[in-house]
Length: 152
Image 1 (spheres, one colour):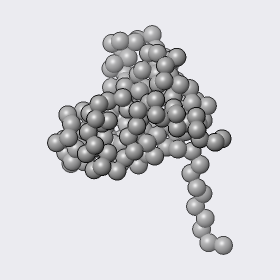
Image 2 (cartoon, helix red, strand yellow; image 1 turned 180 degrees about the horizontal axis):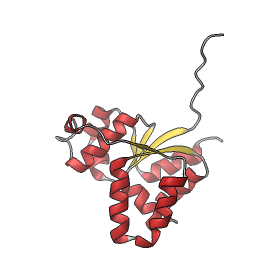
Image 3 (cartoon, one colour; image 1 turned 90 degrees about the vertical axis):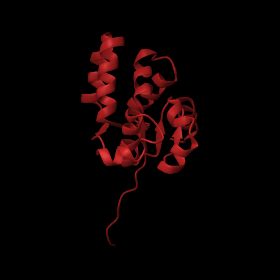
Image 4 (cartoon, helix red, strand yellow; image 1 turned 45 degrees about the horizontal axis):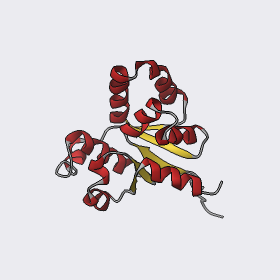
């Protein structure tokens, strides 16, 4: 019979910091729906250590009352946190965007998600980013549309 590798059923999705933060800030909005769908098991969530660090910093400053909810997401949910890329991997993208965004892009490339979901214009507004990275980069609204179309 040979070795059979089971197919991955759910989409693997890398969320940028702005999407996760916005999901906590405005849970009734599109990013909030994305987090809700993750908790319902509609897709596999992957973020990088840089995204975690940015979330903790931003939420500590702007939304400290949601830090326990962030802790629940990071510790008690089945998300994957990938390590930050090496400087040489970040350098590949530094000519397209600032260093912070390049670090997240490099991590997303290494994570090999089905989608990178972001509201950041540096990712969405530059066609070279998607072309060179090979990532499918979409807005939160487009991702929710995609989830709503996908059969169970």
